[in-house]
Length: 179
Image 1 (spheres, one colour):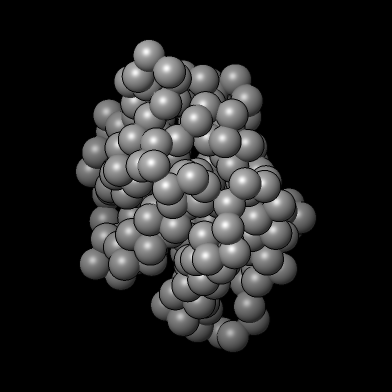
Image 2 (cartoon, rainbow, N blue to C red; image 1 turned 180 degrees about the vertical axis):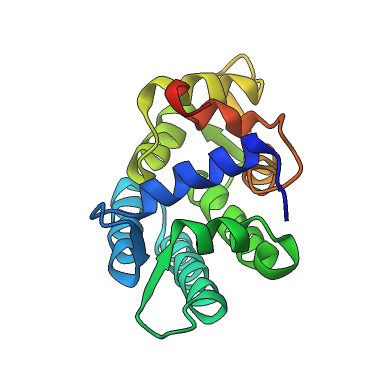
């Protein structure tokens, strides 16, 4: 299946972030490392929100492993990852759960709004570069207090994984040399 080149670039960048040890594969230990970094960055969030993001990362991994690890070696290659993650019918539910959990984690006071520093801390914990985070946050059209709506961020996370969409706000996260 052919995907929009920008969608493939977004997903390949996420693969690189998840491949924490740089060995060319995503493994359970990579997901665990990222999960721990994100939870640690969510200093103002309650235990329920932290448990939800842990569950979302666990589902992300278990869904990939169940669908892609045919030989049972516990490793997912970039080719496997790209074809699977860009298949909403196979991965959409995991993306929805992850998007809801991450955006809720960014709203520790439960007012439906996310502050720029909280957003940046979570995105940096995932591994996204600081230079791109301001452009992404600004694309969400923050209010006069520099706050964005939880639902806007949740929808953008889901949009990030749309295989035929080349024009998403998530393109801000792709380093210039990979665009």
